[in-house]
Image (cartoon, rainbow, N blue to C red):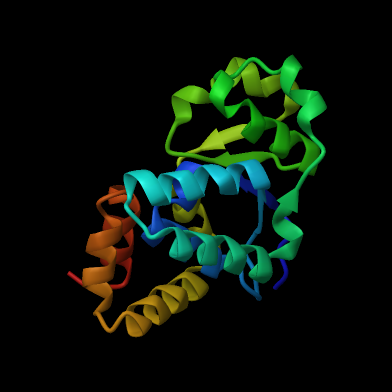
Length: 185
């Protein structure tokens, strides 16, 4: 399956490593969606990783290089001319502009308040919490979701329940749903 549904991922989601890891694995072939970001989004991820999360600068730079290498089609640019016409929160206008320019109809963000419906509707874009989108992907492709969860758990040498409990800190409804559906409780 090759899904070309474009989803712009906000920096707050990409900087949350457990959530980002799952989302990007779901974007690997056979992908369930096509991730979109801009250099400005990745700069914001770098700032968050190095300041708030205390990542070494080299590790944060390696992360940026790896996501750009793994998903070269994800990067969009030349959308700055759109920003002045946008009405969402000023600090996140570049995210909406990237979504509009790339023809994404969805922005994944933990900061839904920065993307009010009245600012998105003229552009036919919606903002969605990552947990809600992951639940949709799970409902569409439960076997692929279970496979990716199992692969992450195996790579981290932890059981799936522990992985889902860790994800549950940011995605409680999603984690609970998968724990139930995979009979891990």
